[in-house]
Figure 1 (cartoon, rainbow, N blue to C red):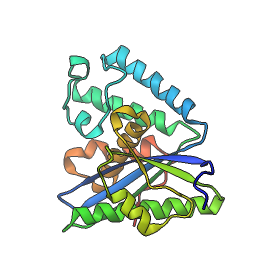
Figure 2: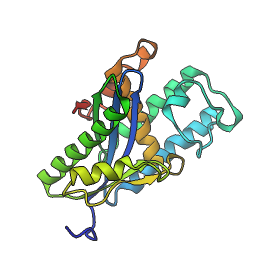
Figure 3: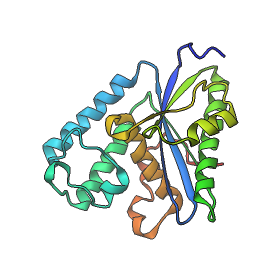
Length: 220
């Protein structure tokens, strides 16, 4: 396959899970080539609104686990948890309202070995995306949160050999990618749709309520 050919989609990928229970999942946001600017405009509008209403700087990294737990002081401020919950739900609404975005979440559970679960979940994501792309005759690139040190992505890519995803995922730090941050908040809400931790009961319905067009997380 000629890897110099253009791709039709770029999937922005982030992980979530609960190591103590062996739950691991990956969420991918698919953006058709050329449509990223309109998605990012909607996201910037939301971030501008957060800055006006809550004082959260537009360049503050949204990391759902920390943000929803009340950690971090964006712009030196400390929004109340209820305000953080509202912001996260507004983020999901913006993501869910983008007609060009597609969402895929794949998960698995290995109670005795979370590292194995993480590998299996990423393998499941690659296979799911490759089947989906093959059905419509398209190709895609992957971008995943990372600093370039994670060998799992290249190893699993070689193992699976996805025909419609010619190259292993490129690792990009979340703090410089709004689309990775968007994938993060979706992955975090998907995690609670599956795990249903009692302490996160308020999040159980977020995935289905705010992302009504997204398929339910798929177990691999």
